[in-house]
Image (tube, rainbow, N blue to C red; front, side, top):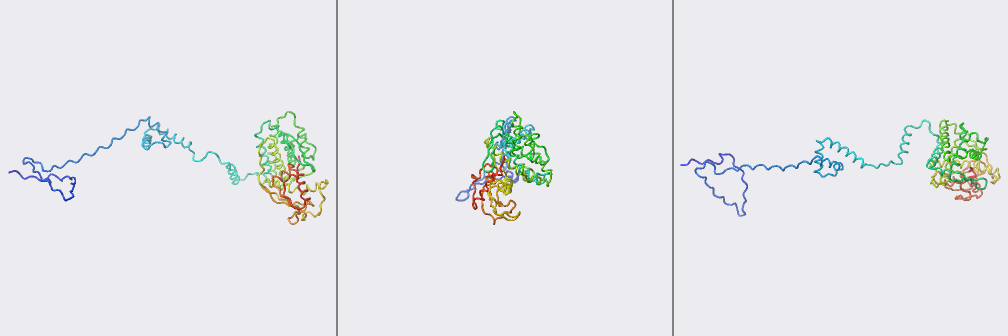
Length: 430
């Protein structure tokens, strides 16, 4: 009789069997179990062995060094694919030579694509200078009344710096007004610079500096015209035209430096213009005005654009001309070129006046005394009104525009208007 058959549980836990499909009409009938052969000691159910784990996919071989090195440029430009980027960066951790090359390429890419344009802001210089001077002012600042002369000489020097020898000999037409008629004189660019230096010499001698004319200077008191003629006669034949620039520029620098170091009291020092005289502060404005006007003459001769002065400087020049008008009217009366005064008043008292309105940059309102030079002009005593553009008013004061041609808005007494326009033109000179 055979021994009892061992149970399957005696050999360990049963394996998990896959679930069986369930028919729609109910569970499927269980198939009959097969009996093990009597002679077999093995259990009726043999547990299935666990399936062997699947082998991982084989890794792709790393590209060779030569290929990775050729990809460094694309990697620096961020133009590689993700797989190429990963391979290159993995290679850089092991290859010092490629790592150095990659850093150099990344730096070069940064230069090729700057975050901002390389052109400097044109206002950067002005902002830096303004900030520096605001934090630490200059020890010896240029007086405010000398800054227009400083600016205009610098602008003219910049115009001259780009001119060739032929342009220095270009003909220049100088215009001014004498009495009732316009006057013209032809010279060259070099002659204009010599004229400016000769008249600037009046300011130099007033400050105790050497006269640029030297032994050629006429006996004092000499007018600007006489000094200019003497300078032109003293220029040797064959002298290079460009040679006039350096001494003129040196003299203008010396005038500004001397005025800056001289202190406040020097502003009222008299500068003789022949028989007339101006305080030093007004003389510097006069020289700035003439420098601007003759720079425009030179620019016209060489066909070059030239802008008016800054608004603040232009306003100071207009103010100087307006302050000189009562005296110019009195001079014209003494020579019989203007009608006699109607109502004389004491100095400082209100008197008959003309309202001068200057429009545009540097403009303003002035009341010009008509009868007594020292009278005080007030709006309630105005008998006439003239309106002029600021640049046109300066052109009239320089003798570049005749009184008849001045495009002025006019209202009031015709005689007063005519006398003021002609007095403005009489402020001009060579």
